[in-house]
Image 1 (tube, helix red, strand yellow):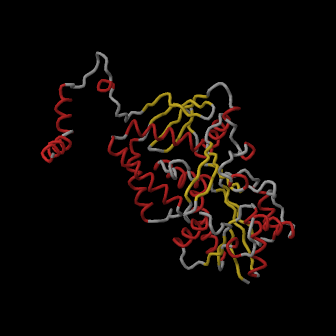
Image 2 (cartoon, one colour):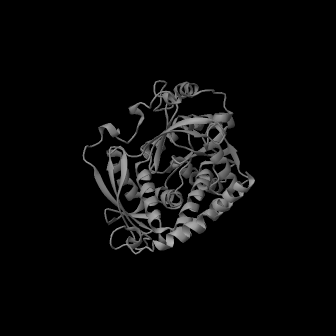
Image 3 (cartoon, one colour):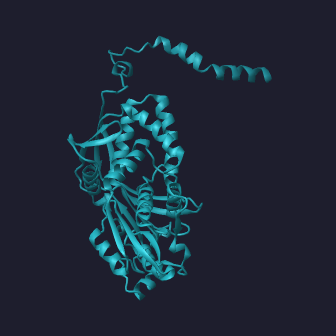
Length: 399
């Protein structure tokens, strides 16, 4: 009998896929569910997989590894796809793929499978990551192979085979969650002329309904990694959990964007990432304080490249690993504290502090303590504008 390891979330696609794989391939299907901080009760997911027919269920807590080895690496890079999307789901796919391959080897499985669609990004992320780790392993994508053409068809299939699902024709949203963020797609969101219904948001309060009193918080960093909240040292999972709770209460972290998918089409995505939004804002402010101008500007270019590698499913590429070496070097001085104010969806900087601060009051101020040599400015401006001076003189000669 063929043996397949399926990346199982308990959602519509993977629940239908679990049954479909058994029937189509006459296969033994092992379900693997990664605890990345999603909202669903993991015990219920395990029971559901067993009920559908999984021969074995792997349920693993990968939250610490996800944050430490994936999300925080992207944070140090300031990686935000198309300047907005904080990549919660894309950062989780290579970790899930890694464990899929490891479990397949352990179970001596013939193939691995996932629930991604043919025009989605995840098919590329899973395929590329799995191939990078074991190019000989067969990859099955049921949603691409099966005869069902729509989510309504899947819902009918689930009902026919007594598969419990939380989705319905009236609420057809595709929702993916983890500690770093929530992705919400499909349904009424496909109409880009309409604003998202408030009911789709999973954790964040509407900024209109957020508290009238602001909330001030201090984030501590050590070499680019967030380590404390309000001077209290916290492990990654607890830190992100608390920031999500605080940010959600104050309406922080909602993003509604039209993004360019890997396959070339544009899609509308709504995201919630309170902790991610807060930490990205704080991290950038700290870098502005401690990095010199040229490094800061060049690193912004690296951030764009890094975000595309993550989004495109190229986490295991040599380029991403090489960029990590550069980024880690830039973070050697990114240590300090940033104080922020959260208010009705806004993040406002209050103060910056670091022993590596490159800000010099005596050079920046215009009061009596000003020590800048203003007389040097004229000579500097003369040399700085020399190419323009030469170009202008040349233009005059040609008239």
